[in-house]
Amino acid sequence: MTEIRAEMVANVWKVMVAEGTKVAEGDTLFILESMKMEIPVLVEDPGTVISLNVGEGDVVQEGDLLAVVQ
Amino acid sequence: MTVIDNLSVAPGAPSSAPEDHRDPRVRLTAFFDEGSLRLLTAEDDSGVLAGVGRIGGMPAVAFASDARFQGGAMGTAGCAAIEVAYEHAVRERVPVIGLWHSGGARLAEGAESLHAVGRVFAAMTRASGVVPQISVVLGPAAGGAAYGPALTDIVVMSQKGKVFVTGPDVVRSVTGEQISAEELGGADAHGRRSGVVHVTAPDDTAAMVQGRRLALLLGHQGQLRPATVEDVDLGFVLPESSRRAYDVKPLVNGLLDSPLGEESVELQAKWAPNIVTALGRFGGRTVGVIANNPLRLGGCLESKSAEKAARFVRMCDAFGVPLVVVVDVPGYLPGVGQEWDGVVRRGAKLLHAFAEATVPRVTLVTRKSYGGAYIAMNSRSLGATRVFAWPTAEIAVMGAVAAVRILHRKKLAAVSEEERPALEASLAAEHEKISGGLERARQIGVIDEVIEPGRTRSALAEAIATAPSARGAHGNIPL
View 1 (cartoon, one colour):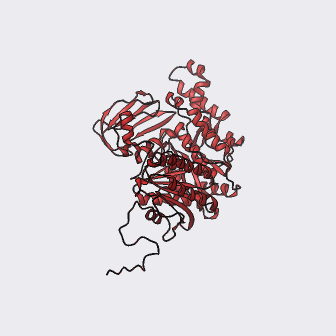
View 2 (cartoon, chains in turn yellow, cyan):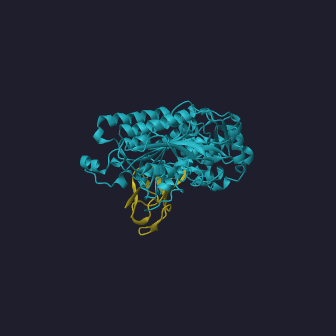
View 3 (cartoon, chains in turn red, brown):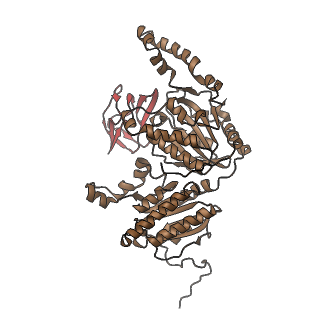
């Protein structure tokens, strides 16, 4: 089980997956927005998204849980 | 009576008995060019064997742990063999490679073995920046055997390698944490989490190939022949929107003679991936490439990436390897975590490393270069040999829109929400004209030349080839 956490303060601009989506290494889970940049959050360990903890428009702090992949 | 035909076997080579992969002679033989190994120390129970040989024809020194005795533990005699290897390498000015498989200091020898291991550390430190030092970890490397590799320039680890100060048993008895050796000190732990290992390899053979490649890149750098450098259009990497992330690695691949993963080697690929550090050939000569990667953290600099790049810059400078710095950086990453993580102290290492470097170091700004991160990425002010920019480059304290939101806060607040975007845009255009933009950067001399992406390789080659070669007079402390 991998917890995907925000690496920086950002706005959640796009959510690219749903709960139950199967993901492979390199897939994009979210696109965050910070520093005037679109910042993709990528899958490092393949699996299935078992929980989505944020939605589009949310503001996340560094370390906040975004999703869990198993 | 059995007759053994020994004619096909070199004198002194092991007989037809099955080879023990832990035998240091087997490992050294596999590491060097075929038939080139000559031993520097005796084959005994010291736990270490040292020898000289060739790597792609280049002379080099290597030593290997002997894991057949006490798990490769290091005692007085074994450590003396490593010192012999170092003395030889420094005298001959050739790279020294350690093939590690050792549980650390020999318990039975007590303080004597600690003293011996400490002497190895001192020898490594004296050789730092003098000759390239590469470690290839093929089995467990614990305690003193962990700090040995850590003191060297580059650490390569095979899938069977594990590095830790104290193993899972000690961790469990002291802290109660249950963890496997692989989780504690394996490829994922050090390749991704700690940054201790620079290169991970799927098996021993692949790890040795990477060790050889790196030794050759640092030990036999070659000459840059600009005439052999062909131009390719590297502009394809940039997305249409300047806000969009992209992977900088295809650009690095196109810049070097051969892509990453072939003759070029990326260091610490999965640790602080928002900056790419790689050694490769450019026009036949070894160069170091440092590139912000907008795919990760938007390419922002932060404490880890600054430290990673700083160490890489200092290593290249110590061995006279010219640097190519590819800049697309929106700034330093803001955040409480970063500040408390010491981004000021650790970011300062990158400023220091570039400002101190004497090797030719050429900068290419492809897109954004903002604020403190602009300065840190080998700017003119830090002494860049030459600074190029693609026409798409922007140099500023911050993005124009962000700047006018601060500078013209009151003016913007006074208009209605509908009118605000238009006013912002016109103020930003005005701001760019007076304070920033590429033209201004060129006028004040912080950019030497604006080049089309299709001319990148030849421009960089010319700049490096015409700069006087130099080498920093310092060691390579593992920052």
